[in-house]
Length: 167
Length: 262
Image 1: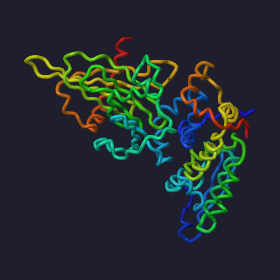
Image 2: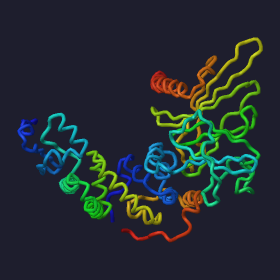
Image 3: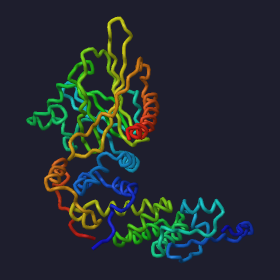
Image 4: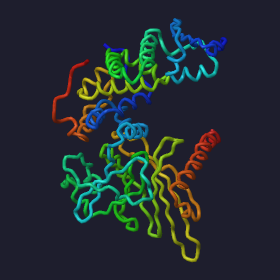
């Protein structure tokens, strides 16, 4: 499993291979991949081929895109990164779901932050019904119980219109 | 329609997402489903994350002295031993108030603004993960009661504890959280006087069950332990350490006992 790691000493960039659950392999520079804590630990243990059984190719491609961009982060391209992040979190909840699970598994803190905040922002102004629809949550309250819970914080349900749309 | 549900995410991620919401949507989200209700009401992880993510959100404890209303700002890492009056600010009407009338008078709904509050004396027992445990009334009087408050959401739960006997001469309450069992505990140390004999102390431990609104009874008595001179374990830290030990023992014993019954 562990191939020779002497290349890093000779000045060449050390490469790592990530393998998705679908069996696809991606070769990346170590400096990019170590943003991910899980992989960083494996690298420290001498692995250079890293199998990621919980991450499929589609999700891994997205995550690599994120890591590549964020590896370029400097003082001067903050705005660019910001726009990249904005674009990155667009998409259905289904996609975000896969990404957030993977980010959690891989321990990429920045990505975790970004995704959790973006999902929270989505919930923010939505009506209760819209939240249930978007995130596929079944309502397990009886009408009486729901009324009771509503009454606990009536003020939060009043005032202002809530977004009923499902995007 | 969507196949994946947010419910399939690990609890940690779900709570992380919810803890990033502002206060109003948090209240609305309690209506979404029972699981969210519990996460938002009693999950220590939620409270912890909420404090980290919104470090400036004040924990509010309402005090009334001679009809003056005060809001106190408390932090999760609040020093238990310092006097809880460090940051008084005037009460703002627009802030969401807990239903104080529920807390004080079980059968009186005529006082929705909790003005009757003035008649009682509230003191702080302890703080845990941002939750506040309060003593309502005077400790040496029989009609005192204990309540737990989630100041983040402005909620109070009154604790139903067994009545005290007349012989009781000293009572100490503590509020803590057991990492091992992930449960909140209220400890009550009672010292009884007996003529011509040493005082007898008794430690009662009450565990906060899952905060299901529907099921009614929230608190269950877990176990009563007997011992002499437990009063020396007065420090909060000692109490917690000691308690964790006890709980490890208890959980180790439980399967053994049920095994014997078979």
